[in-house]
Image 1 (cartoon, rainbow, N blue to C red):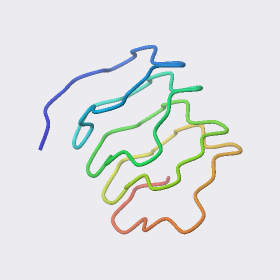
Image 2 (cartoon, rainbow, N blue to C red; image 1 turned 45 degrees about the vertical axis):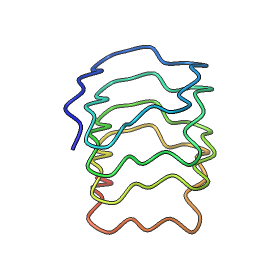
Image 3 (cartoon, rainbow, N blue to C red; image 1 turned 180 degrees about the horizontal axis):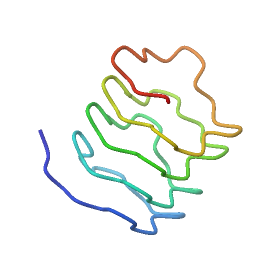
Image 4 (cartoon, rainbow, N blue to C red; image 1 turned 120 degrees about the vertical axis):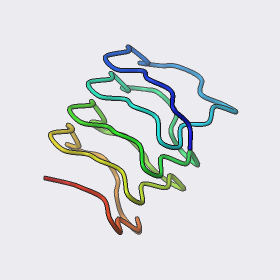
Length: 87
C-alpha cells in the first residue's frame, strides 16, 4: 500500500491522472472538482475530507475511512463499501 501523506492538502481541481491513492492519508483534504473517477482509494484515510458533489464512478472505496467526510451530493451508487467507515 501507498504511504503518501496528503493531510490537509488542497487538491481542488487537481488532475490526478496516473496517481496512486491506495492507502493515502487524505485527512481534511479539499477534493472539490478533483477527478477521482476510476481511482483506487482502498484503505485510504479521508477523515474530514471534502467530497461534496463528487462523481465517484469507478472509484474503489473498500476499507476507506470516511469518518466525518463531507459526502453531500456525492454519487455513491453501486459502490462496494465493504469495510468502509462512514460514521
